[in-house]
Image (cartoon, rainbow, N blue to C red; front, side, top):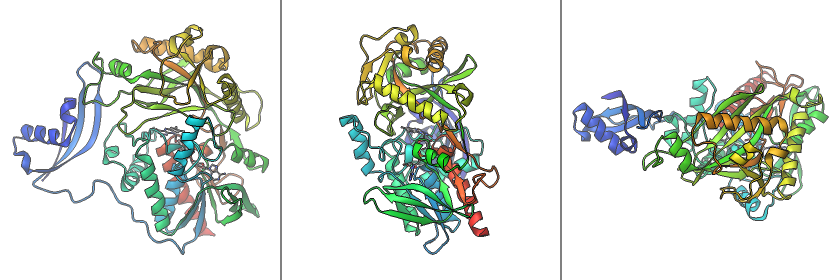
Length: 522
Ligand SMILES: Cc1cc2nc3c(=O)[nH]c(=O)nc-3n(C[C@H](O)[C@H](O)[C@H](O)COP(=O)(O)OP(=O)(O)OC[C@H]3O[C@@H](n4cnc5c(N)ncnc54)[C@H](O)[C@@H]3O)c2cc1C
């Protein structure tokens, strides 16, 4: 017999299947040995009051064993002889596009400028150890894309639950924990993501697709107004190659060379709004105390606490973004002479600090000029200014939070998770005033809403600029094809149609469906 039930329990009961089983057996007055399995269908934490509760929706198997694995499995047929689609970029959008193409009986050929997800890790270490950024292999470029070394947060504002669940199920099929199917705020963690990404790549290859690393698209091949393939160069050997087929362009928000190429080639793009600010880092103990209303912090059974803030200052949104509880701040530049910070966390979120992006909305009309590349150029300039303020290394300019709000230089800085190091800097003075002033007002507001949040124990670290794409590659809403050239499917975050791992995956699947349909019509 399968029974569905909702319970509201203390964290120590929700902590393991064994304690939940004992609780359910007691509640139902049955022998716990008759419960063959318990599946958590939904889990959320209610931390509104001092006593924190965990809400669980359960599926209880009494004298019955579950018939499935706990997720829906997708079949990937052999597509080695099928019609081919080129997928540029192996981030979440590219990976999910490739897998969906296989499901639809088409053969994906994936081209990725960066290294495979394991080798890439060595280049990431060089950024912290030797202040050396490899422009082809970094936190944004390489197998798995910008999402590979991240928090792996999988929540999205997308309303299309079916599409979102499909993405989560595919992650589970490739080794992600089944917890992501039930948690209100699911995340995978940077320690587990690479293994999942490798498994996805192996599915593509085993089904007869191709994956080429260290291979950079240099231009599109256009024939009679239609894209029929790409030219690419192997970064390992310098050899030039062509790959033929309609193109799903999923190159992410940091491929500035791709945007510049599209602009020069007169392929329509437009400027898009972004959000810019800094990372804010508190000791995780402090955030736990505030969010769980308890001086003792989170105790043994609760996860590192999250927060979310939003306000309006002078007609623009100021908000927290991509919060990483128990995580660390990382150097996410994609080239020399720039500083860009971002955040990630391991699956247990057990680190000493909690950080989030604190950003201000910037609209195309806020930046002078009418070039479709102006937001990108503005972003580039801020990152370069930040690098100059950071002593022309990856050492990031930083200021204590209250000092930043009061416009006062910090004469020392707290310890931080940012491994290339911090340098004290008057961010209030040199951050573009559109951003700096609003951020200071925003921090005051967040401090009023959450007692103890506005503190000099927290440090503001500049600069967070890669929150989304500064350019939109304009496509038709129905066919998802570029408005000016046939056979080109701008996809994912870089095209301006997604923000985050899950929405990029959803968009990848949709582009694959449209590309497969297009190919069938040829
Ligand atoms: C440090 C960090 C932490 C993040 N944390 C989260 C999180 O917890 N949750 C979340 O939802 N989102 C997070 N994000 C954002 C998320 O990673 C992106 O939204 C997502 O990866 C976008 O997917 P995408 O496939 O569209 O683009 P990307 O992931 O950017 O992938 C694009 C790929 O294209 C490749 N490429 C670019 N140009 C070329 C070319 N010319 N030829 C061949 N290949 C090319 C790049 O190397 C890259 O691998 C984080 C981002 C960063 C940087």
